[in-house]
Length: 420
Image 1 (cartoon, rainbow, N blue to C red):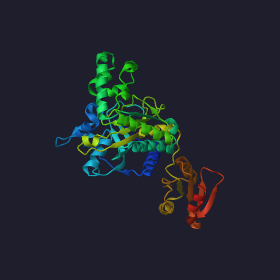
Image 2: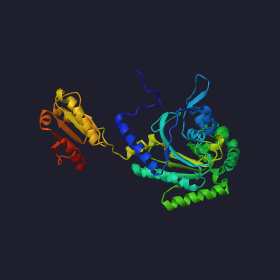
Image 3: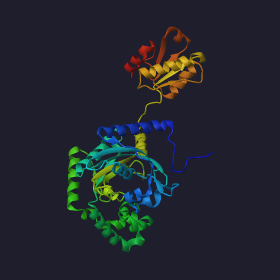
Image 4: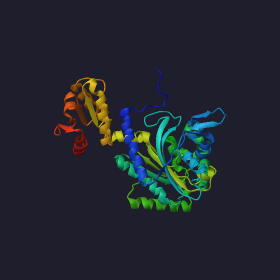
């Protein structure tokens, strides 16, 4: 039997209902901030990510799924959404002398070592804002994240960390100082950090290796290199977060793994999922639009990792609606077609109610057992007696006190609404 590709997984019906709850909740919150949806292709020219994400990043160096098409062009499955979002808006003239707030969702692809909470095909919901230079929009995105966690009921599992990388010039100066400090100590660094010293030295600050972290104790500190304008931006951000009552921790080692970040960076993290602690990450990337061929445009955004959000929803024991709210039991093959008409009528009368029609025969006892196993709240019995009288037997499967009643078709919706 052919199995799923390693790192790719099936999300089966029972789990998919929780996924849908998480997706719908997050997208409803983002829509309440008036961010508009954009849909992006899965495949982009590899050059987009090399120029945008950074050739020296782990993503571009060793994690992308890249292929050559029949014309010989190098294409890659998107490893993240921001570069694609910038490309789409710039290509379609939506960044010229105007601001944009957009959101997107879908699968991303990275060739990483699979483990719980980290997959080679993973899912993100992102939000990006363009044309706003002040820290107010940074705070708006952070507040949006806080609203998502509250709406999902997982806020107690997630904490906010923030930092400022300063301007691109400050970041370059800090990289040079960090490399100068670590180069004589190269042989004492872990293997990944030795490689990053030559390619992406600031990622060494993220190292989980205890020996490397010990060496970093005396390393130059990023805040010492942040320019005054960036400090003012960061101080105003903190003051606004304080005013809004959003708790946070300043983490000077928070640098993010992508080259395009400057100024504000932030992560919503959890201690409840082992090593996969980042649930939502983002920050400001003021130079990316120009880097990809557009005009200098201030920009900031985040991406929520849905895989990890769903795991937190499971920890919080979030309940989801069953596939069917109302289960119609039909007794007799000769009534099956009338049962289908009845189901259609009920769906029209109650568009917010999911209706499942029993198929496969069996007596009412067997069908009621199936109805109960489906998780449905109600069962509607339709047999010869009901067909002859025009009255339907409606039974509440979860609350015995509501019991079973006989109703005309036009009364079913009212009765269900009154007892929901």
